[in-house]
Image: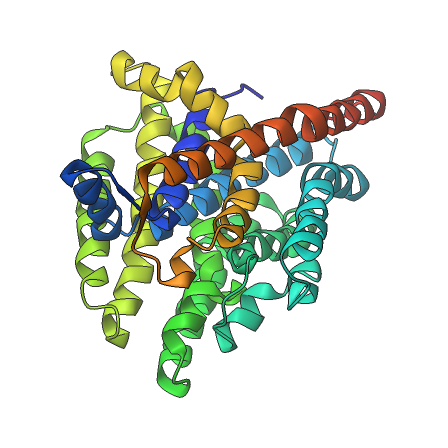
Length: 353
């Protein structure tokens, strides 16, 4: 498979959007104020997570379809690679949070059930953000079996119609029957899996993307971003929350499609260079650690969005920001990267992709 370098930059942008949304206002002038307000206006954290979901759905499905086509699919190989990439640093963060901050409610994160727990118990916790990782992990648990068992045409229909229908129906039922329906549709796997499905659809249509026009997807991406932001202005209205869920998923789909069109067709080289530049690729490489570590760091200093802190002194804020980048960087080069070499060595030995 051809590596799409621009996607590393997309991953970097997604994690920076989440950090932007969670980071408090720096007390350093009116420019910082507007920068902070802008993150709230576009609902940066929600958008960033949905970009992660769409990207994960695309990449995982792309790998599985390639392996099935070339008779190289292996459940053991697939889950071994996921285990090496995901679990070690994930449980390291859980251990560190327990030792330094608190052991409270960490069991839900350890079992990959924090998305369901925090949907019904909206309490403050340094690992509350792991809900999104639970959604992805639940997707990994069943999607390889669907692709392996069904034909490509049948699995394409399942991801295009069946699972999205379940996700939308689940969202409607949550809003109708639960007082905390908004929290439920924001976090539970059977709802948020919609964006992963949309990303997976792009993998089924990868060969056609080289012939798509950029105009319609780019226009729709901008339109749905505006709609997501508009729905965010009235967050306590269930209908608006449902709209935000749909519009954000649609934005992520069309945004990723637009980037793939640009990458495959080699158009707009300056824009492509922005996603391919070394800074964005760097944040893409450390994105997993950055996502995992940033909220515990903010909670430790008492400046997370859950602490209702509006602003922090400029020097303290810059120091915390430095830690949010430095610690994931050390984690990647000293802990995650050596494990990735083990994963790649195993892959080469087994003759897999």
